[in-house]
Image (cartoon, rainbow, N blue to C red):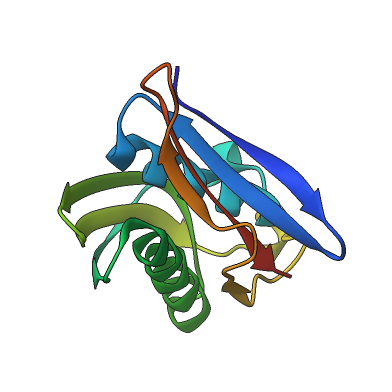
Length: 138
């Protein structure tokens, strides 16, 4: 069953996506990143933003994906609630749906500065489920 979770790392926080496909694990990691900021259920999915990333390997692709979302959140003043990721080798094409930040309704807890290489891991477990994780700088 696809899900996200947080793990603690000193002053920062880790985000981990777990799912039966790599694309879904990337989606769950992104949802976990939103949950660092606010309750994802409080975010509407009224604005669609296309995202494209390419990297030399899956781990760097995860960081690029999360950093692309952070960039879109910062420059467009958005929060995201839903994601659709398609992977082709080390290329990612996605759509992120969300809405403009409403400080009173969303009550953002922190601002994420970036996804880091700390505890960066993208792997398929023996039970065939995927894990995609890294620490985000808050």
